[in-house]
Image (cartoon, rainbow, N blue to C red; front, top):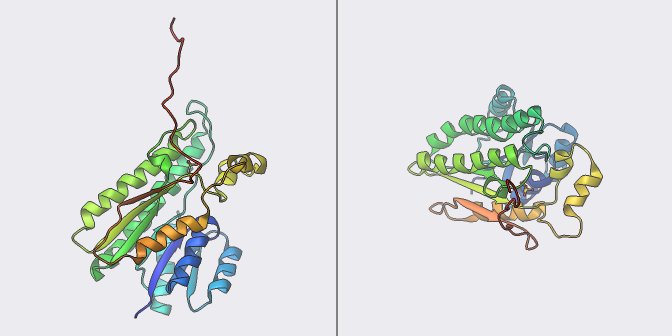
Length: 255
Ligand code: 8X3
């Protein structure tokens, strides 16, 4: 059977790295996209050069990504069958009234703008083939509000609704779309959110068992293992040790 190709963003660590490994083990060719070239080289070495190409650039650099994909298509004959939009981050956990506006704009740019640009780039060739899968990595933060989640959660709500709306456009073109929405998960997520403050980042996972990147990779692999007539719209997964909390009520105000 002809091997399929998966383009994975944010592939240099965490979910992206685990997804690349998992899909390679499932006989997918991998195009790994991330900024850190040395990590991508390491991944390529791990998976084998004939099965892994990489694009070392920022996911916001749409033109460069387009050129690189064209080059990979002409040199290796690989076209994207599966797009895993994994790149994304949270920056800061401040209340909305004192959050950093630059952080907000960067989250919107990477989590929303870059994701829709890349999706728009690969869709025409998927539609032409009448085959393809888009897997977006959302978050439970797109459904459940929490203090300091403000714009991060809003970007993930965007990703959730964008995924559902893609389905509305693609259901008759044999293109599948899934939004995977993890809860607390061990990765560089908190280190990035707290801008390198390891102690603060570690405290997020202290004394509990978060999801692991391999758990998210397993969900991706399961979605891809299903027959073509099955579309999983959303998967929400949390560690067993996490649950939604009660609504907050502010008391004794105005009395
Ligand atoms: C990561 C999950 O709950 O830390 O997207 O925002 S959460």
